[in-house]
Image (cartoon, rainbow over all chains, first blue to last red; front, top):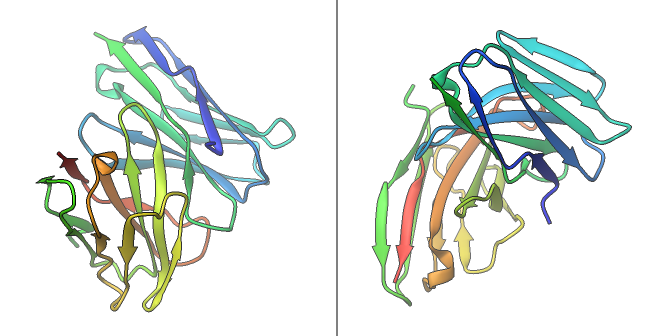
Amino acid sequence: SQQGEEDPQALSIQEGENATMNCSYKTSINNLQWYRQNSGRGLVHLILIRSNEREKHSGRLRVTLDTSKKSSSLLITASRAADTASYFCATDTGRRALTFGSGTRLQVQP
Amino acid sequence: NAGVTQTPKFQVLKTGQSMTLQCAQDMNHEYMSWYRQDPGMGLRLIHYSVGAGITDQGEVPNGYNVSRSTTEDFPLRLLSAAPSQTSVYFCASRLTGTRTDTQYFGPGTRLTVL
């Protein structure tokens, strides 16, 4: 089974609203990363949070990490139609390459 | 830099055929990996390499071979294609074993096996 699991699987919001996606994982991690994938395209790295960090910001993105609960959240503030994409969390356990969750499909209605 | 490039972009195979998916990066990255993405799912790791001459299996290696003769190239070979291998394949690379390095993805190869 997947190391990371995103929730919800799909999310539809209006432009200007905030979007929150969650990721849960099972084993200890070195870091957790969030990626975006536009339809039919490759993945683009958004942000990385280390296991000893609790919160990180990058522009309109805010990521939190709770290692005691083995969970992370990605918040996109003031969403835009261009934010429509699938968002994946990926965990780095130090053993292999990144392990990805199944993603959250975000639809931002203009 | 071209980043991570993959060829072909699309491929249709018949069951039993073999082929090689090409992946190259011009960033002198040590780590390279191959993932497959099935509809509505995340990426699953097929094989990865920590440097030239070194490869290892990922989560779903069966039916695939890899080699890493150079730092730049990391081809993925399908030995005898099966319909279950219909998927989108992504190659990725990152600079070193340093876990905080950003991973860069290629644009993907969409493979259909009939």
